[in-house]
Length: 77
Image (cartoon, rainbow, N blue to C red):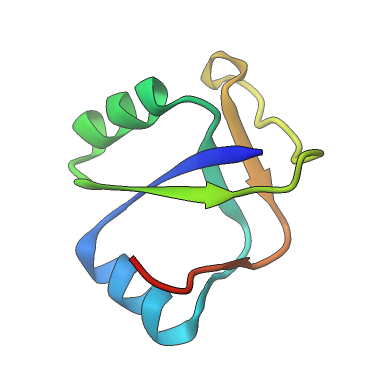
């Protein structure tokens, strides 16, 4: 599944250095919800990630937030 992860520039640099986002990795099922989170949190970057199809849903968050307990590879932007 495609999921959208909201982060800051500092976090993106860390992801690129390590090659992965370490768990727990939280993301949104829709770009609209990721944009809403970006505006409310001040995190300006939204990454498009390949998430496991069976990723569990986080409680609340309109049923649109998912997470992974496995690292998610980040190979470039």
